[in-house]
Image (tube, rainbow, N blue to C red):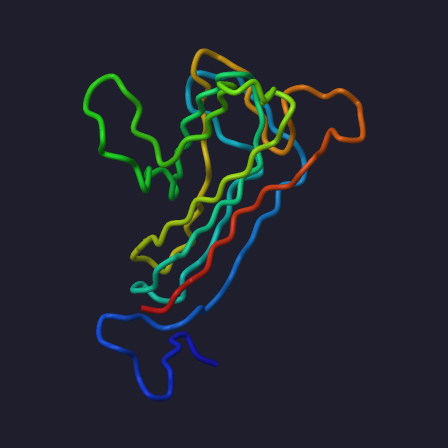
Length: 174
């Protein structure tokens, strides 16, 4: 047993070891909000207990989403109650999110009938051996419909799809 993985020939300068543990949560149901304030996306959270305080957590979020035409949905990633990966681009009334999920229909593609996919990845340094919980929160500009794992419009036809989203947390030895 080991809590630090180092190749036989050692590590190159400035690099880290290998994966110690992997956790995943899979969201197979849908989520809907029109909230203009940040709201937890139910089922899009994951907890991991690092074995070492110098470990890093490689977090990957795979999101399937749909919504109203001209949806602008900033997303926050929280470690416990701390917003991580937050943009520092703006200092005025604009929104600094971790990432954003947007739907526009400039080409007449009827986006409200489609599901879109995005992946966000970050390497976090929680500096603890206590359990940390990562979760996603979303808000909807102008109160437009936002969905996880489905489109806004459900025609009942076979081409209407339900999907799944996931979060994966990997402890990387320091």
